[in-house]
Length: 616
Image (cartoon, rainbow, N blue to C red):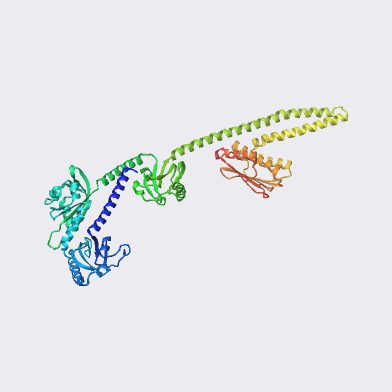
């Protein structure tokens, strides 16, 4: 607990002690405070009044408003009511001495002194006390008042209308270092130098006092030893017995220097915190347990489109220009923080209601008091939007570099396939052709029939090998793709698949003789080739449908079969299709599979292209 908080607690304890002292003095002097509202015929009084009327506060805490009038002795009722009527009509102070009847039938003599309220002429406030029937009320009251004023901790001074001191209690003597003997008969304004808080002259204060009959404010006065202290000063006009009599002034002072010191220290702490808040980069804001903002720095206020941090005090997330989705997520996290959880370096997006997006790196921690109770939440956030943008740009560059490397690898693979296909066709293929010609020549020479049959078998095997080499060569790199383009290559693929299987293929190719970038044509062809192989091996399909459309800036390949299908959640798509999907992504395209058990399979591949690389 810091020093300002300790001072405030001490001052509260002093106030509670002063209130208890006042209650004790009321009991000691037999004096009760009373307020009479003649308009509403209601009476309000302190606990001591119950004793005067012979009642127990515990059992009679609530009394009817006319109880005051019902207890007046019948012989005094007419006189009391007449004096009350005269006082209220003339708005003059009350000075009554009368008898009341107690619940046990006994009689008690009561003295009542009251004056008109400053804000309502039909409300009187004053004191009442038991008096001796043998002692005049004024003298009895004076003795009681002397006891009360001398035993209070407040400095009490009574002056006449010209501020000449008539009474100076012991607390005043201790506070100002001036004894009652030295003070009485001298002007209060000459004894004590008073500096009113807002610089008003004493003449203005005196004028206000005469008009309102009460004045209260904060002052600075020179006290014992010449030290200046901050005081709470109250001045009240005392009621008089005659209308033409000038009222005395009751002056009371309470030393509030410690409170002002605590307030000044608190102001310094606040100034320091404000400077700290406003000079720390990023956002800082604090919430209470009701999720209301109790403090924030200027950066946060400006980000929320407010001019000053104070404009946000008391607001909730519902009052801020942020989306409800973000507010809901934030409230969920904050509920965990109020339970004691700490969130450190959490990266999260914040989208304002104006569509502006921030990326924040946030820390959310509980705010605890000196005994560990969670009072609220402290949230610090660093705006990492620019940092995030740079990181995303670097990642995009890395992805592009990886894409280029992958395309280069694929292109290298295709080049190697083309080379192998040419080697098989031009090298091994030509050698097999020469071997077959030699075998045919020997077969047609004058050899026995048995040897001719053996040679024919060799020729047949050579032909089969040639056919297999042609098939491998075409699969590695069909010359029709290089020579005539994608449309002819797909048509050739469909034709050869029908020849080598029992699958019927319906094809619809709507790109005519357009040529596209080599990487795009190879990708579409390889995807179709892989799907045909998988269909032939696994689908048990009887019919297959192929469609290729140019949708303007993108090619769309659809291949659908009537096979047995599969569950894509449980069956792996295989390395081949995974590679094809990767090829499509490298060209900024995508490959999508729709299938389920018993319902065939539909695969859609979309590859975007640039108009500039399309040629007829």
